[in-house]
Amino acid sequence: METEAREQRFVFGEAAELYDRARAGYPDALIDDVLDFVPGHGRPLRALEVGAGTGKATVAFANRGVEIVAIEPDPAMGAVAMRHCQPFPRVRIECTTFEDWPVEESGFDLLFSAQAWHWVDPSVRYVKAAQALSPGGTLALFWHETHWQGEPVRDELDALYRHLAPALHARNPGFPGLNQGGEDDALSREITETGLFAGVITRAYPWSASLTAERLVELLWSQSDHRRLPEETRNRLFDAVRAVVAGHGGEVVVPHTTLLAMACRRSP
Image 1: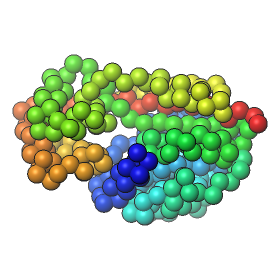
Image 2: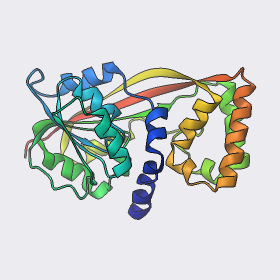
Image 3: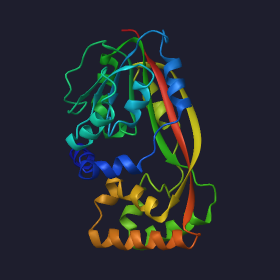
């Protein structure tokens, strides 16, 4: 399972520029809430980012004056992140995995991960995060989810996936998020159960994306599970998705929520 996760992680590098163009950034309110949660906010902060991708979250925190060591395992993704972070001399991108990164004991006030925490080995991630954070330091994990609310386009997409990519549909791809029933508090319980962190709080930031057919296909194409489909299956699926969008006037609105879970590292 760990090997499969690592293989999927590196699929993103095949289309780093597409990923950077297609993926959404993060709400300003979320960045504010994370920084307000860090003990002693107002002083210079040092942060560790796990899974920087192309640097969308990196830049958001760097814009607030945070010093950042950003870990990104894929060289192509890391190269895009470096380009975006050129205006920020206090940001350093390290091309390695969090599992292989030589931990700096108690070296950081904040550890954040944007849509990447699930790629890290579960037996390593919380232990190493606690080692990297100073006592009382903040762990902040955030990610986007689609939150369909009865939109007809959701049912049409669901039917397409069931018919054209049933194996993918059964695995419940993160986007377009057709299968419902996930528990948003599952990560909070996971953090608490480690015994390494305390005071878990969660926040939700709703937003919507208006997507043309090509923008929707680009977003799907940036997903590792879609990229790993057989080419013929993927082409049929994407053509059918374009037809659905055309049937809705050439643009669809996809409701999202960005979810945030934060906690403090317990004192040793």
